Each structure stands twice: as structure tokens, then as C-alpha cells.
Amino acid sequence: MPRENLPFTRDQLKARPVLILAHISDKQAGFTRTDILRGLANHISDPLELRTASDQVMASSELVQISKGTRTQYTTREYLTAERSLETVASEMAQSGGFKVGPSNIGRAIKRENDRLQNRSRGQLSDEQVAAIDHILRPNQLSSVVGLAGVGKKHVAGRGARRVGAAGLYGSRRSFGG
Image (cartoon, rainbow, N blue to C red; front, side, top):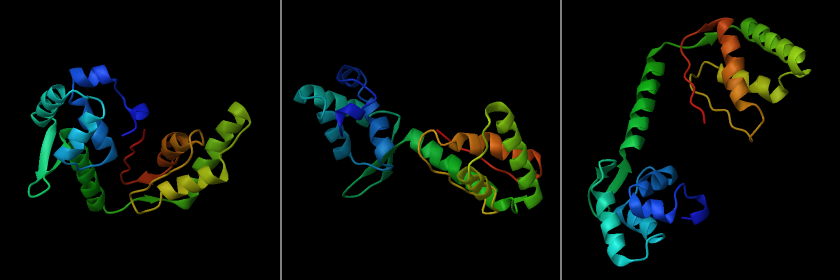
């Protein structure tokens, strides 16, 4: 694990060894005790301190055992909560019976958003942003918009899709972003 990407210092990790769990689970959903020890050992060189830190992590209420056997796997309570939430949302979406926005409503909403942008900054939605709105509003219920920083993903997913929704959205949409 490259040290420059860590969200904590060596001293913080020594004081709160459980910090290693968030770092490991950001990289992989399931991990082993060896992964935990390796992560700690990259920052704690003293064997006694390493043993104490690993004991604290293994006893943490944030650590959840998900499988047994020759390679016992663990994850974090936070990860399991997020996974269950996503399963619930997916189940709700599957039972919702569809999602429909009429093409004329999409066109009117895009025009209104372009007019707003034109008045505000002499701009408009790019072809890629319009395509993203179309993608988000397809009846498949689950969409992903990916792009470089600063290209307008949040704008499209948030403001643009809300405007379309106000113009004739039926069903349910959930948005997760960072």
C-alpha cells in the first residue's frame, strides 16, 4: 500500500490501528488477516507494537468475518451496511414496475436547462451531457455516468435530471455520488 495515499499518519495508525480497516476496504471488499497484518506492518516496525495493533484490529466491532476455512475472509461493518442498502434499493427498483419519461418531456427539460445556462454563462449542455441525461433516464433503472473531473457529471445527474423529472418523471430514481 503506497504510503502517500494513506488517509492517516503513522502516529495516528499507532494510536488507532482500526484505521487500517477503512484503508483496506477502500481497495477490496473482502480481505484476510494477512492483509491486515501487511497493512499494519508497512507502518509499524516494532514487533510488540505490531502484535498489539493487530490484536486491537482483530477485536474491533468494525471487523466482520464473512467466511471461514483455510483463508478466513473479513470485511467492515460499514461495507456490509452499504452493500445491504444497495441490495434494498435494487430490490425496490426491480419491484417498481418501470420508469418512464416521455421524449418530449426530456427535450423540453434539456431546452429549459440550456436556456438557463445561456442566460447565466452563455453556455449550454454539451452533446456528452445531453447523452448522459438520456442514459440516466432510460428504463433500465440503474445507470452510471463516468467522466473526468470537472466535465459536469454532478450537474447532469443532479440539476439536469431533476429538471427532467419535474417535466414528467414517473417511477423512482436514486443517485449516489462522490
